[in-house]
Image (cartoon, rainbow, N blue to C red; front, side, top):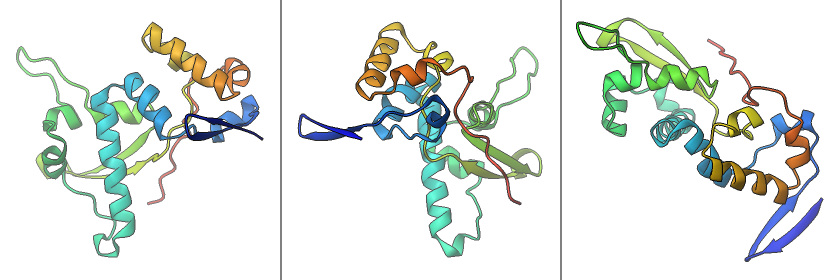
Length: 178
């Protein structure tokens, strides 16, 4: 492992094979700089809120693994119920896919719903750390951010392995143990 000192920060540069990139955590700065614009600020902030709630639930023996209601999550995030869980189309109003479903599609969270409507309860499993974006995902970033991303990978010694990735995502599917 080669260690480099820059601007009072030490960064480790490690050769990582393409097969190991899925186990490599690039760090919180990487998540902030690249995952946030990839998924949108709103989705990223919602994911961070769920991550914080998961840590609280896991560390509080009195929680019994019980998640806050969607109404409570609405108050925490400032988002509407429709934005969080989605809504069916009605009249002249189009339907809306909720943030929960969109983050689940990215495999960043898994959501389990019990009950219907306003009385439903959700339980979540959350990836608290996100891997590198794949070339396909990074290709959806704004052009200048794509360039910054490549520079970051090059400085980290990961670019050559990363360029060989063909996976759509490095996020590992969450396994639910009910």
